[in-house]
Image 1 (tube, rainbow, N blue to C red):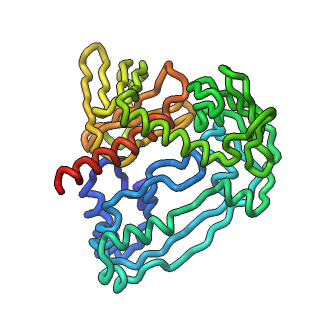
Image 2: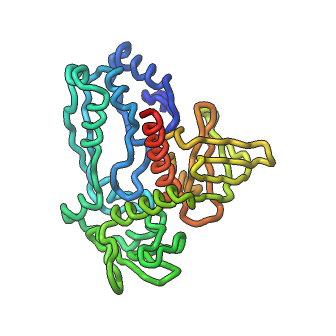
Image 3: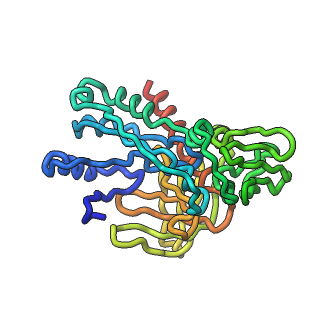
Length: 324
């Protein structure tokens, strides 16, 4: 990847060397820099958070900003669907977003507001509005990774996405994911016909648990570590715990004890079927990243990311109130 000009970095870790490398590419090499600002893959087809530092980054770089937006990529290969491709065309358009003069004139906050507006999207809504028909019979396979909580009985970890339906193993209620991306209850009321609305309800539930002090993740995990760009290393097993106090990872026969506070990152590097190994939660710092593969507990990856993002907001809000 370096040979074709890629600049390596670690997701959700403060990395000033990255800024230096981008400046070198722009100023010394006279090269364009392609950034993927969303380090979080979209689970529900909507935009994931952008870092507050992005506006400051644009001001430091001082280069014109062009935005390339793709259409159809999520519909063709949604993250939850175990790398099963659908027959959906993918296209892209390009927009000249900011000139160097506009970047100088705007504050970092104003730049962030513009970026948030431009990075707003809903791929399920795009599919529906453009009448994109997805006929593959496996379109709801593993959708339970995203929609892990039943809106009918509120049971967690009992959902199963299989074929074109997602069903609750606790109360038995089923929903059909239609060819045009809507959810329809097989019987009774459809609580959420739109996948992102269901996911948003799960976010609200997690936030309520955090505020009430009842949120908890405590699962056994297989652990891999990344300490260089050569390889990822399997180091053993352990236990990952996540509460309102942040992450606590222990394991490797007592040799590993890592704590990560809630304010460390605005989101969480998490993925499904990571390199065909399994669902993963990744935490760490500039020295080491810990890739944790839950071996029990069901579909916890989406819930943990939601909790990380909401906990970060709560932490920031409390700090702001304290500062006032």
